[in-house]
Length: 64
Figure (cartoon, rainbow, N blue to C red):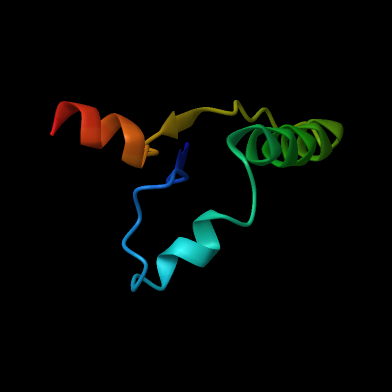
């Protein structure tokens, strides 16, 4: 299981903001699926599950 923390609601002073912007949720899924395929070639079964914990600043403002 991987947790995706993308989104635009990160505090600008939070050092994790840049790390979360390195890839999209889709890119993360593709990378993990590729790794699962490599493991499958060795007889290891891995299932990819991504928990989307991203926050959108616009949505938060609307709920505000």
